[in-house]
Image 1 (spheres, rainbow, N blue to C red):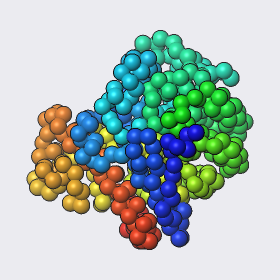
Image 2: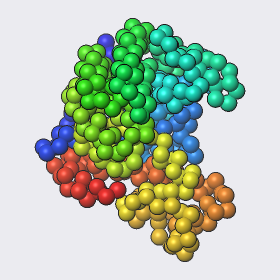
Image 3: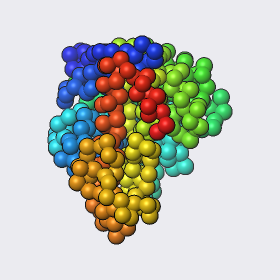
Image 4: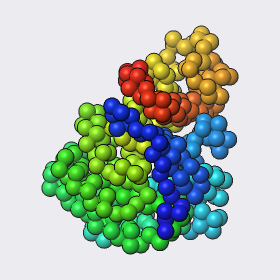
Length: 369
């Protein structure tokens, strides 16, 4: 039984909102929720070593099974003992199923009922993934949490197309559960239904019928307006099982994290912390800023005076700006450390506010982010 490997303790729920604080127990350690999960697409979080990640307080990281299937191959990683040994990371790992690539590489794939034929973006070589193959790949990679293979509808899309993608997701979900045999690995189903309330409700009801260790909300942050994303999250999260973690996929700005927690979400992931850093932008409690601007040329203060990351404790904005303008990789590394730590500390402080019965004050204080 998977219950001996995974369990969720709900410690506190805010009295005025759906915000929750809990602990999700996995084979590679316990995760304090709500939590932000840094993304390491190719089995490495860009610009950050294991040491950096540990210093930021990362409790769980992501990798992408589709990209690892292409390079270096799931069978090779299996030979090394799975992702934990391959990466030398001893904390929990979650892998995406490849379902998002059905959406993001729509111009390069051909979706059929049995599965999806892909073209490798760089070489044009053709590959094929279906629910059974996705489960094989993720069981070879051996993360703690595997995601179901799904079809994400684009924004905007017709009601008819949304129904087709959702119903196929549900049929694929059954195949995923039938193919998934790894007891010490959780399989999370994913809500789809595009931007239609009735479909979201139907999908939440269908996936909740599976006895999973956790449940995910997919199909958001794909180009829709912010108000619509918030509406769909607020609608969907409370429909998922109360006693299991809820995961909002692909969301990770400070305000998105804040709103997601308010609506009852426990887990988040996004590439923005390191992607923004590579373009010079960084999070602060006064909003997002960019190190390239001239105002920081003589600024001797840290990136954010409330942050306790390595970059903020050791370097000034002026120094990091100089490094960035000179093309020094250290600038991107320092900004990546800061952004990742900023989000993780933000989530930690948010969790403390729930436990201390002052989440609403925390929300009001940071709702301008």
